Image (tube, rainbow, N blue to C red):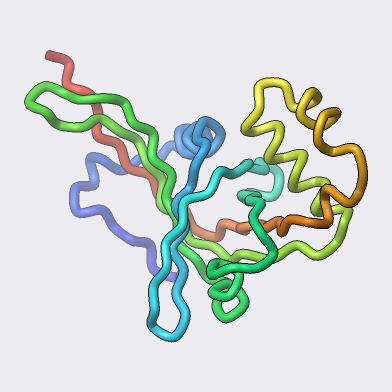
Length: 164
């Protein structure tokens, strides 16, 4: 995406990269939009954020609608929303990011293990317990699909809580 999307109300834009990073690190679910042959599809997935690669990792079944869509068009757009409660007058306080990227279906065992580690570290308070309980052999890593979403553009938006 060459042109940066401009918010209609630029006072709500988050320009601080650390705040955007905080939303990515704090979130648990991302909603991803896909398209094939002019047919849209939307799915919400738990994720792990890899700071070094600026990428999200997901796990899912190796077959299904999302995999079919991604095989035809790996370009996606997604969002993560942080709900900060109601404001005065029934408004909604939030922070959100919208990102554009490309999803790769990971094939190699080494990166699948790496992706699962990122997911567990991001989603679980004690990833060591989960790893010892469920990830005892390479077969566990081979069965599911691991997806890596490489983010190439991201914007942030915030609706601040009223101070009244």
